[in-house]
Image 1 (tube, rainbow, N blue to C red):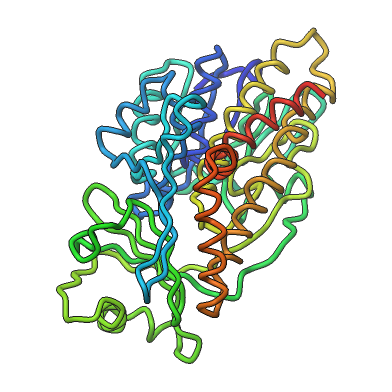
Image 2: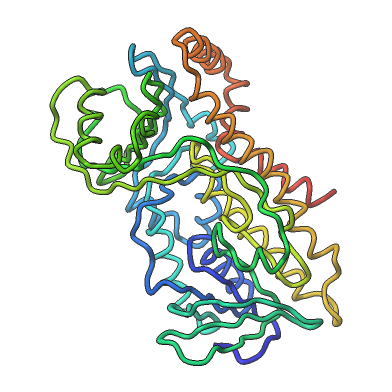
Amino acid sequence: MPNSAAKHILIVGAGPVGLTLAYALVQSGVAVTVLEAEAAVSRQLRASTFHPPTLDMLDAWGITAELIAQGRITPTWQIRLHETGEHVDFDLSVLKDDTAHPYRLQCEQAVLSDALEARLNREPSARIWRGARVVDVGQHAGGAWVEIQPPGGGPTERLDASYVVGCDGAHSLVRKAIGSDFEGGTYPDTTMLVTTHFDFGALWPDLAGVNYIWQDEGTYSLLHLPKVWRVSLHPLADRPLEEEAQPERIIARLNKLFGAEHRFELQEIRPYRVHKRLASRWRAGRLFIAGDAAHLNNPKGGMGMNGGIHDAICLSQTLVRALNSAPGGASDAVLDAYERQRLPVVRDDIIGQADRNHARMQLRSLDERRSSLAQLQALIDDRDRLRKHLRNTSMLDGLERARQLAQA
């Protein structure tokens, strides 16, 4: 571990966002220590969608090729009426002049974490300290610090650095140290994430790799990963969650949906609540937050992890500028650039877009759904409007807006 606080960043949390930030900083000559309570990269299926600009960013490090090798390229995504089979397909090849990767990639987020961790482990200026639980965070005039509980217990230890960044999730200790409110709320519906090897494409050959589907008993989604299909269901309102999450109950619902007895061998069942929250402040002095520590959004549209990765790239640039500032430290103007660029984009282009996606899929009547579908089809038939829509939903416009905010 670097023994000096000078040009040294402490990152709390070794998820995709924390590891992306760490590697971006190391590539710019900054020493990092990543502190993570968990002993290894989580294998639990969480985010699985990589958007075009995220793939563009990671390509410079050779990581996109690894993701593609272990993922599934998804050139189209679909919104569909379950009862009738009516659907619209959004073809991302429209973005071929806007990005080097005009598609979504379906790949487990652990693949990204593995690739980043392997690279960081080869860097002499980086350390990932697993099993180290952060118990306190603070700062002083010349730097910031964390207090950790080392693996196996024993006395706590204090580490000093130039800056501390919290990539430590929804219950972020760093966000609390900043004094930031986590404003927003929780959607009333619970989501049940289910994975299965069953091939839904064999039942409906016109399915895309990513599908958002209206259905009277609750909307659902189907995402095709290389080895499994990922199904997101909502429990029925008149049944307890514990009952709805039982394998036999989920299999019965899937059989009802698809009209026959099928062999749905379930691999994973994970119920979770969906939040819409935004931190009121992303920085206080030498403390910063990024990713889920700063924002949570509805997963429809697959923008949460991508937005966190975009946070990390932006913050790395801010921190490098700060560390290269004149003696005496960076000005508030330099340090505030990160929040100025990212907070409005997350609020409007990520949380706002995800909220609109959620609202659209909550349409209840068949007439409303068909009207929405007709509007989407009209959008697809107008190539200029379609490109604008896909730039927005693929997060390209949000990044362009962040670049403009940086120059304001």
